[in-house]
Image (cartoon, helix red, strand yellow):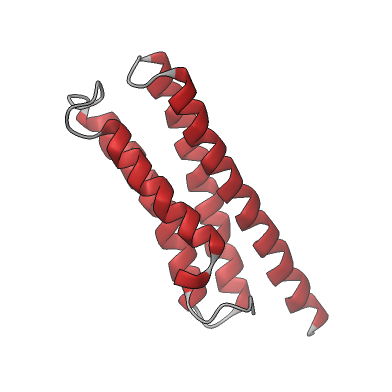
Length: 127
């Protein structure tokens, strides 16, 4: 399907794992976002959703299911990017840090799109 034998071998999952850690470090205790529980919860959950939907999709039995969950992961990556604008606007993080995390989320989003296209093409070709 992808050449990977486990989801942990997928580059996009590895990048999503790093993004989760960076999000937690950036909005966790001791940061300007520390007291905004709603915001922190939302951005943390969205980042985790990216990583977990990639993993869940990989573990599914069909390419169509994997592609669908990659679409969900891509949507969550977009949510993370949007929330990073909120973080920047509310001065929860410096613009450079927000952009750095948006770039990481965009890279993951592009990776999920590429893998989704590959899965859907190979599914069509096998019909």
